[in-house]
Length: 202
Image 1: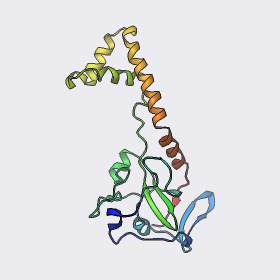
Image 2: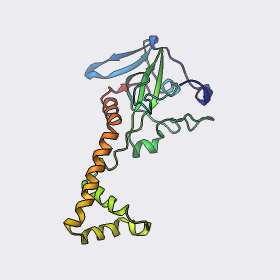
Image 3: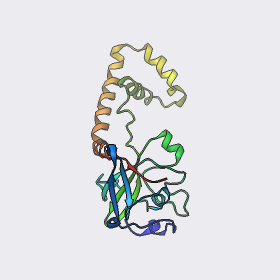
Image 4: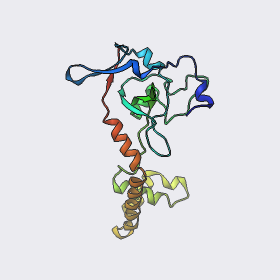
């Protein structure tokens, strides 16, 4: 993970030794992130070096996840720096509203990092089977104008159940393939969603 532009990030990055950090549980199971006995502030959190928690190829963790922090700001994906660090998705306020995703605090050796983790693409997996079947029908037409949803809907309505059957089969097969293909990502996503929320000081 070393080398390249990742090491050329600005001076705003802060290194925190995990030996100085600790999680403290208050009433009603509110977990706070503390550094040397003091609750971490928003400013310090922003200075945590951003690194990928998940390896894109193996879907394995690059370190130990501590928890989620529900705090986002424009450019926290690195786009506000001279050398933006590639990561698994943007993380500005607008993106957070449209595509919810967690900020994860994780341990990398003796250092704390933060990571933006984008949710897995579940398009077609969670869609109704008829929606996927219509997509299969639309994909057969090379003319983009004839692939508009209203045109496909009209065409679908004129088809018999026998004519629809092959498209339903394509849809079922595709959804099964997508579930198997995304199984590791879906498992990791479920694990990250189950992490405790960490509270930091304003």
